[in-house]
Length: 417
Image (cartoon, rainbow, N blue to C red; front, top):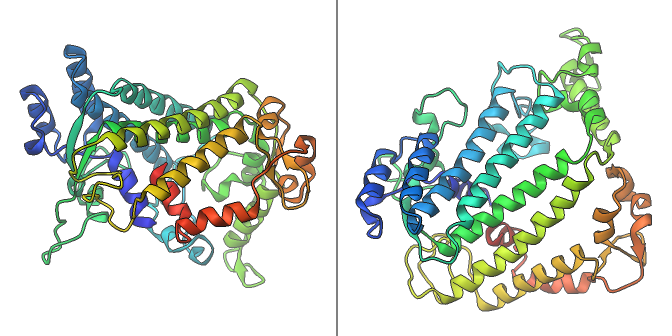
């Protein structure tokens, strides 16, 4: 799963291996060679936009623009989170957060951040993803193909303006030679992959808008210093540093603060809806993900090549992730899951809750939103206004689905989008 996540990110941060792009014109070749592995994707965006404007039928360049803009969205998000020290407190909590917590890029000299600034980061992320979504949508169903070597991928994740060895993201995803150098990791992105990445852009927009559509200022003021060390909040202003040798139940003052903040975060997750229109857009994005996923698999089914496929069909054997066995049965089951999720978003199928015989009408959750209360959703009271009789997915059906993916449904879902 860890390598899959890295590869999915690298797909967005891909730098283009132009010697294998037979379809690109000389201008595109010169452009791609200039930015091969230098990590300056912001500059590549400007050049690619000019290229697509000059030749609107250049689907390869349009696909490249979509990849670059997707990459830029995540790079800018990474830079902002690093600037304010996101994840810097993960040391000492690996037993709870997993080993990956120790590998988060940490900034131990972060800047203060306000609630409004954090919302601004999310707003910018949505705008950048929307720009990428539009660029990828312009590819349409036109044939497009870009060969990329993900082993050379670099991006300026900390925003220091330098692209050094620490920015060589490709080293994390590629196999290595005996000398420690990364082996080439070639991927042939095509039209279907443009739909796939467009789907991920919409999925991330749904997540960000779910946050932005709610007022979570109470949680911010009470607990977000556990996420951002210098979060500007009422609790941060009131809380003293305490004695360095202070301990309680075997933990020091800083650790006790973090535990208290985490408990406070859970307790204050009772966020009112601040923007009903944006909350409705969350459902729109999720439904668009489903439509794009269907289009992705329809295009894959029509492919006749077999060339380093990012997302291969059952007839294609040159997939870049051989550990994922893409079979006709798994594709059909996945498409069936999407249809059920779509029906749930429309209120035609109900979502089961462990405590009730009736099911939850998810459509009403979007049409008539109440404050989001995490604890009350888990325990049941928050679900009561949305309960009704009707068909709902049973645990037996879900167990049958997961068995087809040999207990690895989550990884396939992350891969398939």
